[in-house]
Image (cartoon, rainbow, N blue to C red; front, side, top):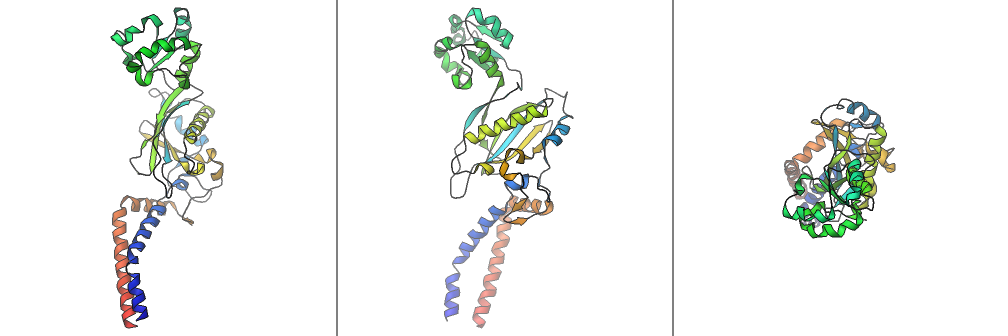
Length: 318
């Protein structure tokens, strides 16, 4: 009777067992470490170090504008915490990635210097009304910069400029108009968006470099972006697991970067999940299971049912 009663008390625990299976399934889905090259186990994705990346990018040189877009996948949730809020920021790189149309607002004496620095058009402070009147279409310009003493005049058309309104934090307001223009050309705005593949992640996609950049410049741009992302990392999130992976896309091809170089904690890391070493085939199998998690959980429920029936039979025999 004791054994039967004890077993009956265990029946409601099937729900807890099911929840435990769900938890283990989430933990078993390969995350950060599977995108990092280990010395003995091949990664799920073909992650390239910078030497290998340089060889791959040589194929794209001379095609199109040569701009390579990068997607930084970041972990947006941790255990026992809700998903972090979306953020946006500005990264300032060492080299200009793409040409921009820049409207420079400055006094007439600085127009020549502004044009030499890369401005598309110069505007006197007295002519700012042309923006609100529609004579100058602000949509024709990707960036607006100004000198410090012209900022107050631009405030009158702030509603028209919106996100293009110059700001000292962006570097687009400076006493030297040439410095403001150069900052505008080197700045790239970014923001986090929900990942389409996994609800626990955010994606940050932005133009990061040109295919013909020296590999040292490419590494510098990636390092700069890593630093920018870490600035917005919540305190509960571990810095070594905050960035999940880095993916470069150009011409329909996706290249994945070996991120150990930017993470001292993973320089000697191997591909392990739940303290178990997985081969490439096993890891892909886990990913397939994750894609059809519901079917996997249904099969686990059936196993639980068989286990309970067998357990019940053994208890009745006792």
